Amino acid sequence: MLNDLRIEIKKNKRKTASIYIERDGSVSVYVPEHLSDDEVNGLVESRKYQIYKNLAKWQLLNESKVEREAVNGESFLYLGRTYYLQFSSEVKTIELRDNHFLVTEGKRDQLAELFKEFYRERGKEYLPKRVAYFGEKMGLRPEEVSVLELKNRWASCSAKRPKLNFHWKVMMAPLTVVDYLIVHELAHLKFAKHDAPFWNEVDKVMPDYEKQKEWLKSFGASLAV
Image (cartoon, rainbow, N blue to C red; front, side, top):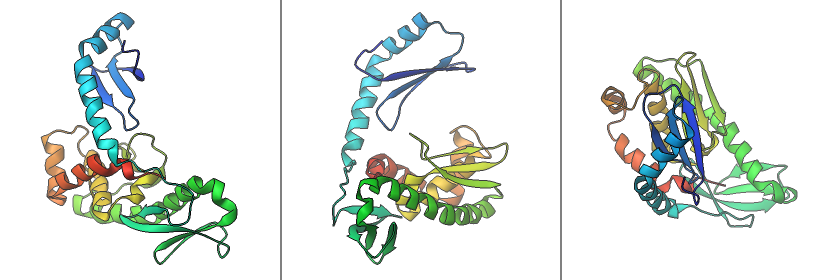
């Protein structure tokens, strides 16, 4: 194994092995459940060059990561726009007014949780409407839209129900990127794999989807509190 890396082995009913670099820089290895530990170790070792190459690319993309502080004037994002933090005695928790996020002074130590809750609540209001809009274009009607903590994924879906899930961080992204993520997950209700039919479905609704994909790759790390 590569002792200097965080590697998580995930076995399931699959025919081939896949290795992914997660958004937090960890390595996930998906392998057929019948493989032994020695076989898994050999697989990872054989793909060592590929793993380090992809990690180097991940590090380059994550140069856009922003460390935000709980101080007046710090910038925070909402649907692609920049707003500035201002601690105030006029609000009880957090409010968006003009170009500022107003936060009560007594909640300074809880700033991250306040923003997460803000994005979740705004997402619950905003995302279902956009899902319904694009769903009508694509002939789809999901039964439920949730805003959650999805760890290293921007969004996910369940075709059986059907249901769409979005990370609360999505509400920090530009409107066009949010729309792309919605269309992407809706397309998965028709096509499970990222194959030609899937991307053709996305392209029908959003011809410039490649631009939005590239934005996420380049600036996704900046969507953080």
